[in-house]
Every structure is written in structure tokens, then in C-alpha cells.
Length: 203
Ligand code: GRF
Image 1 (spheres, rainbow, N blue to C red):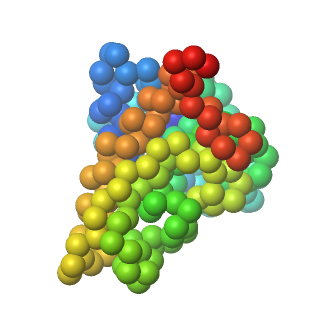
Image 2: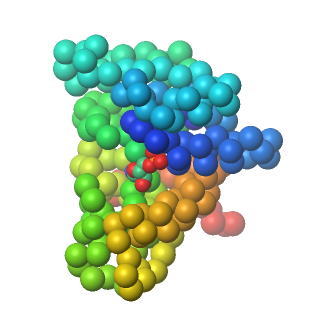
Image 3: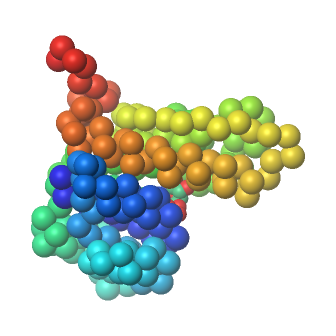
């Protein structure tokens, strides 16, 4: 499957996907990376890895609909079949989200449905949970709310700070995201309404 990754910054999850996809047995290829910020560090890594990149910013587009239209054009050029959001810090329009429904996934660093939105690690520390983690989910219009495909847990340790907890969680993200994309690319999971449905040996 041809996959395009959307980023806004560091791109460490994008890098994990690119590295997983280097294995010829992996069922997805990363055919393009698109950022909404021209200075996203992840763009350099992608370019060095020989992956074509595009920058589609808000400042070049008067409104969200035209920004998403530009995104659609780039996705068509790349021949994208699936989209992975990886730290893409911008809300997509409803029509874009519905067009890619079941074919677009996101990673969020919390055990959803807990701690949606910004600063999930600080939210976890504030809530006093002893277990935290990350989730890969299908993207629906409501942020961080689509059907969950896979999750990984990490402990919250005494003395943890937002930085230490986010570093531990990020290491789990880098393993989880390639696994979840693999499930989707192999057709082992699909979105059915508000649930992720998994193919079993019989089904
Ligand atoms: C990750 O923690 C991801 O889960 C969240 O934003 C962060 C992006 O980091 N959505 P990176 O750009 O992948 O390094």
C-alpha cells in the first residue's frame, strides 16, 4: 500500500514508519511526506531518505478548505492509498476526513479515550494514573476520538516529569505505529462505524 505521512515537526514517528517500510516484507511503502510547517525537522530526514516531500502551509492558503484541497492534490500526485498522521498539528476539514474515512490513522500519546488533545503526558501526571501509553486510531472528525486499532502501555514512575514520561511513551509509539499500519495495510483491520473490526482466521 502507498502511504503518505503528514507531519508538523520533529517527525520521529514518521522516521519509525520509514524505517519499518524499508523491510521489503513490510506491506506499506512511504511514498511521500507532507508538512504544514516549512521548518519541520522531519522534512530533512525524509528528504535524506529519498522520500519526496511537500510543504502546504496555512499562509499559502486563505482557508482550511483550500489548504485541504492542496493536500488532496499532493496526495493524488503521490498516489496515496493510506494516510498516517504523525504529529500533524492541524484539524482537517470534515469533507477531507470523510473522504479518507477508514484510510487515515493517527497516533496519540495516551491510552485513549483518556487525555485527548494537548499535553496528554501532563494530563496523565495531573490525574495521578500509574499506567500511561499511546494509541493508534482511525481518524474521525472529532479529535483523538476515532476507533482504536492498537495501544501500548508504559508505567508512570515516581518522580516522572512531562519530559521523562513523554520520552518513555515515545519509545513505545515508535514500535506501535509501524505495527498498527501493518494491520491496516494487510487488511487485518478496518473501520466499521465507530469500531475497528479485526479479521480473524475464520472471517
Ligand atoms: C507524538 O507524541 C505523537 O504521538 C503526537 O505528537 C508527537 C509527534 O512527535 N501526536 P513526532 O513528530 O512523531 O516526533
